[in-house]
Image (tube, rainbow, N blue to C red; front, side, top):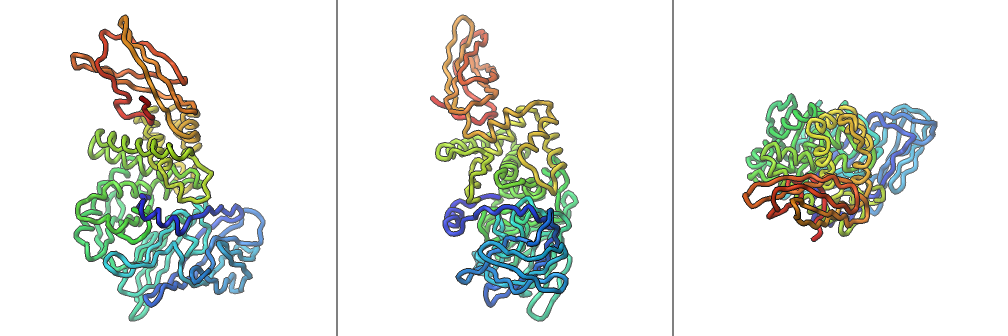
Length: 520
């Protein structure tokens, strides 16, 4: 996901996303969502079939589902199981269904979504409907378990006015003209997904099918008014998809549709159909790195998902760094360094006001996790891991991590295990200091040259202890240079390096390998 900071700040005030816990007694196997949309009002009619199992003895199927309040929200009309009505209680954020049986339940409901399904007009004044579930806003329009750890198969059966095209999670199974005014679209995914990336998009689209790229059908869905610009901009996905497929693994889903949309975020990585903000289309291909970020999410966040919100960096940090890697691949190391240096500035700025670690379980408003710790610092953790274990072991660990957790869930310890296995190194100190501690090293150094030796004293001024390699580039009068790497293990220590002559200039971290602050 890429954030739209101005819009996000406004919407956070209006609709904070509060923490919803997974229901440990229930494992959802499959959702079948039937939705009817219309142009007369914003009421949606829904029918949801849920296949589930109890993980332990229970007599209540508890789901997340926002009840109607002040004219917005969902009203449950009835719930059936094996043709019989079930008792239920629906209030606030929860729907509790009384049943001991594990047979499929069918929930009939209607209402005006307060959020989650955004019904609005695009910038051309045309009506649109876009699912916008992250982080746990799916329950504002769908009955489900709104937590990334409970993955399930899904299908969408969407009836809408025939002037619209429908894109949704999964593969298109059916298009049927219901009557003179309405059409039915059916999409289905046999793969288990988190609810945060199960969506529909309904609008008047121009659609370009780019063929199969890396064996995956690739398409662009844009508003007709900016069709030429949109097709040109979104065609960049071909090169991006090829790169990630080669470096990580085959694309995890059955299609990739890049969709111009009218939603909350700059980009949202919905599985197999990514939604981008309206002005991502400009005919100048200025959203190349936005596309790369969201396409990287298809592997990390959608397929291999964080087990809980506190490990969000396994999604956002990955997408940020893999965008950096794509930039390095296409434009060279100077572009990688440029992006990392900007990301370092963002991390340092954030740390000056917020004293939290990358793994952060303190948040109750999940929107607060959309911060530089999850994105930019997460990217830096991966970059420093890459430098620590080397490129070969880095890619080996990444590929094994993905293979072991695709269509499943992982936490940060799982990633550590994969990197230790690939590299043969003990990375406990590395992961502890960079993911569970606040901040980063604040470095001050003093140096002098005498008797053929360069003496440098390194001080760490931050509260927490860090261990890291630190590079200095020494430049000499004859315009030659030398890079010295020092292994920093203490809060203050002095090193001596034999040199033929005194350096005329010194630069710290010349290769952009360390997340740190320089203190003069």
